[in-house]
Length: 530
Image 1 (cartoon, rainbow, N blue to C red):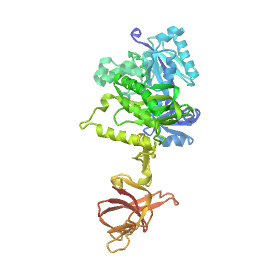
Image 2: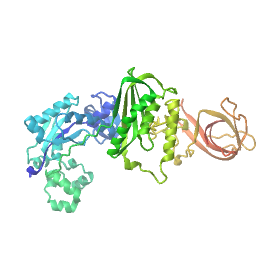
Image 3: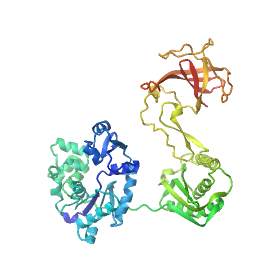
Image 4: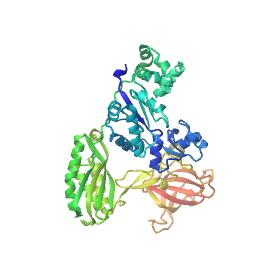
């Protein structure tokens, strides 16, 4: 049976999610760190485990066991990005590596073992390579098939870093392990309820009965438990190098000269993407100058970049200082075009009504931005916060629309959502400085709101207090419709920062709507609906 199975070598780096997340966040290797996924501990560092932090704990329970615990959110993008150089490090010794998951990879054992003399010698060589690459603590398992090799790697230790299971001995090695090693929660729960707690007990069942009772997934898990993992090791295909670089010798000091030279590189880049069936939706342009500085910026596109679009972005970036001249402050020595995000071309096919208008608007605003500067054109992104002014973030046009405050965080004191009576829809203009105003009832008296939310009278008119930035000061605006009050109690736990107010929506005779707030007897306009 072992002759038909592939001798497989699995390289495993324990606690890899912690290593990747801690490195990205700038924490030292010996810190007590836990990585959370869906509110529970996914992985923890050795220092955290020494304090009792275990996989599956809730964040609060983990922090109660280790008060100094650094809690980081699991990011699969960071995890995979950090592991990619490690794969490149191992591929320098032996090609044909398959990535199982970030922190674990597999390769056929035959080639390295013949080159280095034996399977243990080849494994030690790979671990030494990781140590040189500043990735300590690696383990290697060697067995018949990827599953048994992975379990062998997990069974190794810091002292015995290499575990070799002889050919044909995978079933005997796997028999004492629990069924949790299959990583199939539904099947594992069912097997436990049937009294099958070990892989050996599960493997003792007849294959036909397993297929009939548990289906194809159960039959596959049964083959793994019997040590009959015949899955081949499929080497990863290194992604093609898409970035393009253009060096200028001698340096060029005119925008039009740079744009003319970039055209050929842009055609080459888009041509390669077309060959691969891809389009670029996010481009990073790096401009190296003779002074040694590198100016870089990311450009987004509502559809995809054509060669002409790439040339335009380079030209606009060179003119981004706000001057309209073609002279550069420092000659350009290098241009790099880097596709930061590429998508299959089928994901950006034209809709029923086409995509022209959005693309023209994007192009026009990007052109205006090149003349006014990077922050000259901005769009509003709604994020988290307690008030509209706090929730809005001005993002330069073409940058990723990321709010300053994450919307998914708890915001005590905020009112968000229809169930909590937030004034909807969101206003189109939020004033940086609230405009003082007076709201009057039909009898001419000022409207007030009690602590219980009771009005002294219905709003009938309003006027703004005199101010330099306020037009039509003291002009009386009749109210044709109104809604509210929406009581707000912010930071009730902080005596100094506590804020109690009520919000209203008022519609004037001209059809314009306003968002007002009142505290005690003081009214002000926070925003307007244009």
